[in-house]
Image 1 (cartoon, one colour):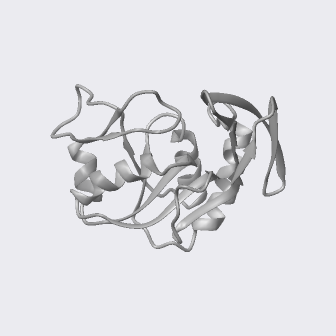
Image 2: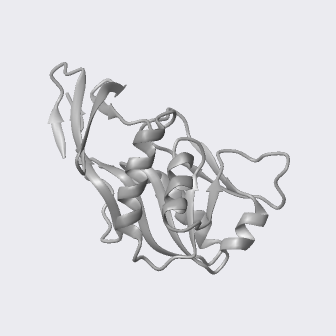
Length: 188
């Protein structure tokens, strides 16, 4: 879904009964997004976690897999709502403590350069051959999910679903996507 950008500064979105006012941010000369950030907002994170947990509770998975940083509080909270389920974090670089790290590259619309996505060998062993659900806060192009898929294919893990608070734009399509609300892109 796209909306013409005409100088709007905010976008109001209804998240299953909770309305949030999102600030509009420019990401390219002709593309603006409604910025959705869970970090630091415990109440919003827990609210979205509860809604998403309800939507994925019947998906048969062993682990949630997510990228590091913004989505970590969401993953932790969802796993708590689902009865202390486990999650694995794919990081954006190799850390000194990692053993036998496996990596790939990712490009998203909110970053200017290509980034790495890395899984520690010990976490790779946990999810090897397992059923996983991929989680992110916002899915737009699907670049982050595709990078996680590339790593998971090396581990023979079965992706049984995807989850995100918001689905931005129309680029990522999957009948296995569970999300709360569509989020438009602002063009022009």
